[in-house]
Length: 493
Image 1 (cartoon, rainbow, N blue to C red):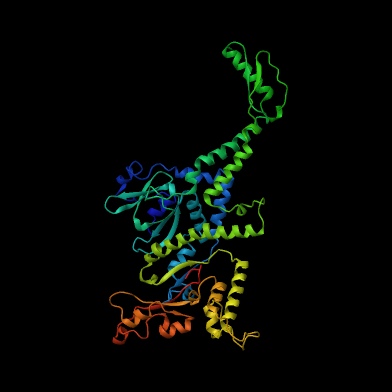
Image 2 (cartoon, rainbow, N blue to C red):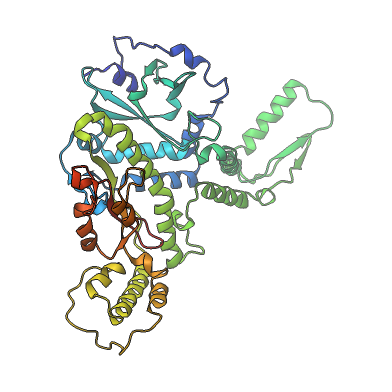
């Protein structure tokens, strides 16, 4: 295995010289239109300087690292529930163990920290010199990576700067970048910390001021005022005597004896400076920049079970899931294609970390059950009714115990009210034709038709695709039409 690149990443000595075919281009980057000094190193270091920032980044990174991943073979129907799990594949092995020193969890947590702090997550791919198949993935600090712009192809490659200062040229296919797009720099990302550096400094400085306050005997500073100018020897003697008697906590509150001069208090105290309020405001600004729910920080004021559970769902849905989607996109569209034909039709996916809303689900189940009861009493087939309102198949043993003599005239409006939408939206399957000049009339006429359940849909579209009445299919052409399951109002497909 070629170790020149890997040795540079790990700061190991390498006898081979890595070619730098476009090194000169990196010299102008940062002084042109894009890529001003972003102080990425300062953004990375901010995590260890402010407690609120550490809590937010640490909790988010660990939540993303704890999500379960799987590799699947896509179904012809295009539905997630019809996918087949893949338990043995080189891509799956690589993702489960990215390199000899990182498990998937540590790899994910490291990348998530980088993404939260800088808006960028960089992966460098290590390969065998005789193959294009990835053998290892390495997370790389964003402040060590520099994109190399190209006037013709937009991006020529990347320059990695190792800890010992060595510059390594990397091809585009050697690097995977996951980022929050920067509004003024198309080559880099942006994170909340970049906008918070001034506020983070204020929080850190207030903490240091408090620390120095107590190191200074918990007393505010002051001035020794003397009449006339002191000689150098007199100044040194006064300073040494004062330090000997009053410097340090052990000498706190000792009475000052001044042979010459007058002690003058400075009027600013902790109360005057309102440092408690300042630090509280700083923490709130940090939390708002990340959109981080207050209950997830362990705060107990103004937190109850309802908004606590709501905060947990908000955290997972709006902070964790978007980052996981970005990782999934990188795996499926950048890493998997490197495995060639063996990865065709495969996709990585994660287990949704958003907690279930039990109360909402209970209300929804009651509404669907009431809608099903209304439809059955109106004379509709029980099995088809269950599918129409989104309930699982249940064996039907007889008529409802209290069926009305006649169905209400406005049953469609009643069902719509129970389901939160019109009755047509309860029809779960819809025919989709490839509508162009080559579509036949039967396919065009059936385009958009809805079906109550999968069984009915597959009678017209066996296996989920190919309309049984397609004219082209009768002459040996493949029908391009299909039937898909669509979500209820307010849900995904």
